[in-house]
Figure 1 (cartoon, rainbow, N blue to C red):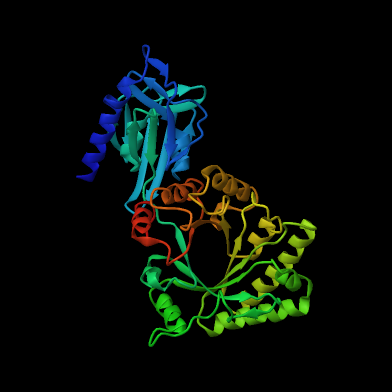
Figure 2: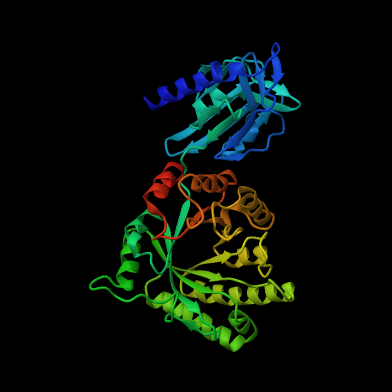
Length: 414
């Protein structure tokens, strides 16, 4: 029933929605038409075009943005797309000039045969939606084709800090949860007490230890999150005093191991806004290298949480840190004071800059639901999916709410 509804929608878009676009003969540019994927424009090597009343789009550009493997056979003039998901593997073969395609060996008719336009294979947009599970809608007023990527199973990390208990029931929805119960204080000392990022008080049978144990028992990996800023140079003290640093690292690892955590999430912010950026990066690399060695010896994973490379903080060497940690979280938020949804172009830029230094399978996109809402969160998740990142990290439980959670559930497996 779902498949029939999708085909009807795509057919309606092809025969009705695009019939209002200007065409002259067989081939016409779709002037003014834009195509967005998960709410953000997708770059195309060739403009979308209307051919015989059917909107044609560059196949490889959309396919690869959705994680579909694409191969070109020059001799046979064929393009092969292979997609693997929870339902199995789908193999689609299209041939230039041929009005039928092979889908897992079965012949499927095309409204218009694939065409080569300036070295790019163009196919009917409706066919793409049908075969790869993408939602397709047409906005006549904005002359915009919107493509919604299929739901995907990606790594999900949730943050749990003070005030998060109202959503403790959401812990099983995540692959991992980082508990923000410790920090480096103003004097540069590691602590689990204080006014913020502290070990919570027990409430009857509900204790911090029981929450961690229940998370692990339910299949969610619990991480000990360590937070600090550098407003009073507390991090700088740790970077410059190797003895203090070793004490800090030993305390972090001991706490994580003794309390049943499976990993450490290091969130040390504020480095490199001023001063010698190269020196700060080198000092932080040393800190993370020493922590990584002790964490591995204790069988603990290490996630390092970082300011984006297009922020004001330049004290983070992504390439080296990625070689020391299991993964990195890009905190792609607070660009405009978290007064509303983060600017998509900034988030996009933060990912592209990170990918210049780190492989996609080690990068996690940080998303703050303090900034985002149910109408914007999936656009950010869509960028993580578009670039094939390891997953997403949500700041934080206690702020998510059912409307945002429901929308997230349409984009990723929770």
